[in-house]
Length: 211
Length: 211
DNA sequence: GGGGTCATGTAATAGGTTACATGATTCT
DNA sequence: AGAATCATGTAACCTATTACATGACCCC
Image (cartoon, chains in turn purple, brown, blue, cyan):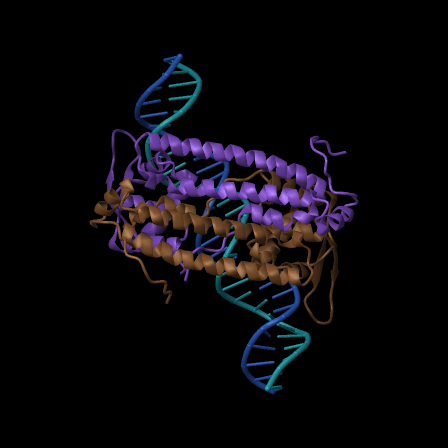
C-alpha cells in the first residue's frame, strides 16, 4: 500500500489528468489548472510545474511531442501522455481514492501542543478561529453556488463540498472544546490554568486584552 | 497573517515546546516526541530533527548549552530555549490556533480529479475507503481510551478526538456521495458514465469483503 | 562472541520554492 | 511612448529525506 511513486508530487497527478485529454505545453497546463480553480485543491506554483513535467518526462510518463514557435515568443514544448503515463494516472488515482493516507493538518499539530499556552489565551484564540472558519465556510458556499449556477455539473465541485463538510466539523469541534475548557466542572482545566500561574477558568464573556 | 517564519517546519514548533520544559539534546527530543506519540500529529523523522535543531540554533531560538559525554558514546550537545525562542513559540502557536490555514489533503486532490475514473470503478474504490476509514476510527478510539485509562488528562488527547471527528465526517460524506452516484435520479451520472463508455450507474447491492 | 538493535550523528541526494530574465501584448 | 502585465522559461537556493557510519549494549 502507498507505493513509492517515481514522481510523488500531487501536482503531477493533475498534469497527467489534463494531458489525458489532450497534449499541452507547460504554460497551457498552468493556465488550465488555474482556470479550473484546481489551485484550491492542489498546491500549485509556476516553478514546480516545470519541474514536475521534467520529472514526468524522465520517468517516461509523458513525452515531448513537438516544439512549436508562435510569433516571436519563446518556443513551447508540447507534451503528450504515454501509455505508461495513462497507467500511472489510473493507478495513482485509484490509490488516492481508496486509501486514506496519514496526514498532518496544522490544527492537529497545534492541538497537540496546546497545553503550552494558558487556557485563557486559548479561549480567545479559538474564538478568533471560529470567526475565520465561518468566513471560510461562507466563501466556499458562495464559490460552489456560483459554479453550479453556471450549469457546471455537481461532480466538479464535490471537493469543495467535502471541504465544507470538514470546515463545519472543525467549527463544531472547536465550539464543543471551548465549552469544555470553560466549564468549571471539567477536571483538567484547573491544573492547566495553575500550571500557567492562572487561577480559574475564564467564564466571563467579552474582552480581548492580555495584561 | 501567516508570517514567514525563519524556521517553518512544524517539527520545530514541537522542539521549541519541549525545550520550554527543560534543555535537552537532540536524541532525547527524538525519544520524547516518539514516546508522547507526537509523531502522529507532527511529521517526524530522525534526520529532519537534527536539521531543524540546527536551523533553530542559527535563528537564535535555541542555544547550545553544554556538551556532555557519557561513557564512550558520542558527545551529545544539549540545547536550551532562548528568550527569542520562547517568544517564537508563543507567537507561532497562537497563529496556528487562531488562523485556519489553507491546506491540501489528499482526498481533496483525489476528489477534484475523480472524473478521470469511470463511476463504476469509483464506487468500488470508495467502498474500500469506507472500510479503511472504519478501521482508522476504531484504532483512534482505542488509542484514546487506552491513554485516558492511564489517567492522562483529556487535554492531551484532543488532537486525536479532533482527528476522530474528521474521520467520521469523511465517512459520512463518502457514504452520501456514494448514494448520489448510484442514484438513478442524479442528473450528472449518465454523462459521466457515457464519457467513459459505460452505460448505467451500477446499482447492485451486497458484499463487504476486503482481501 | 557474533548478531541484532539502540544511540547518535553526518553527509549525499533529491525535491520544491523563489528569484531572475526577457520578449510580447495591452492599456493609457 | 512608457507602464503594466502576460507569456515562458531557467537557475539558484533552501529544505527535507535517505543513506551512511560507528561505538555500545543486550541476547542467546
